[in-house]
Image 1 (tube, helix red, strand yellow):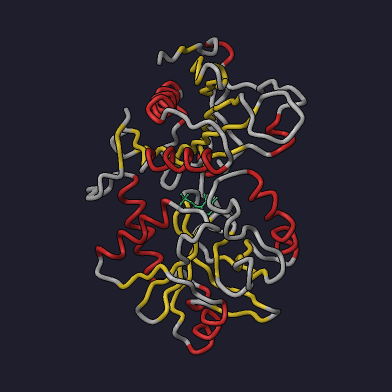
Image 2 (cartoon, rainbow, N blue to C red):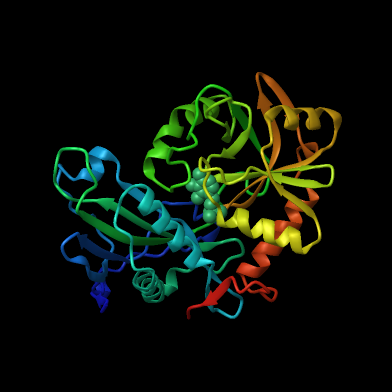
Length: 357
Ligand SMILES: *Cc1c(COP(=O)(O)O)cnc(C)c1O
């Protein structure tokens, strides 16, 4: 498929941020975007890179009414030699298509989507920041555009990719966060859509997240929907606990997102000869180990923050301090390792990174 490129007129380019220490997350977008359209009778058509601009949608677009919307989040990294690298990008597009299948949406041709993404990044390559810890965030998105009221899978979709420079995800940086264990509201249930990266899951999470924020917490730790007993994940991150010499994370049981950072952490710690278990872990076990001192570390994993250490968890009104409120040794070692691979500061033994220009 031919990708048409319409460049912004030179006089109309945006001003790039000069201060890379203040990029924040999710507010700055580059000059261009990639789009393509789908109709059931035609398949995907009109792949196009054009100026970043609002998209026009019919008020009856089914995505607005019935929530057929999915997205991905990945990054491009600038190495010291100026080269631009992707990290496990194909895994993101494979997950995108799994989300599409779950929400009954059209699957994309991964090669076309990735080609569009790479050309977009290279066209806007001067936007890829250079300071340590910064990167270019990539947001592939799809929603149903068919104008129709009535619940069924739509026959028309818009796929687009927008990109923008980002700094550190959390204001706290690598400082440990405080998380609130939610024992009433749930994000996703087994058999539901928790393993799809679809907008509705995040809408469902907002109420409890806002409640926690007002109480001074950064994130909510979700428990399973059936018993409110087992730990699932936090906000937009998978969770790991280090108890004695075992590293524990929840299994992919259908209600949590299959994180690529989660998978990378599991691979790396296995290679380090450490014991890692994907098993049910109850909040009681976490609390008990926090009390008796065997809970050595807790951290979240996700593309945005990579490793986010947890310094305190609060459950039923009780605060439990973890790692003395500091970043744990394993968390720090994992963070350094993944960052080093992403920024080409050490060889990538896994074949996870790809130079695109
Ligand atoms: C995106 C996301 C993650 C992390 O996935 P990565 O592939 O590691 O970025 C975890 N949980 C939820 C709910 C997410 O949306």
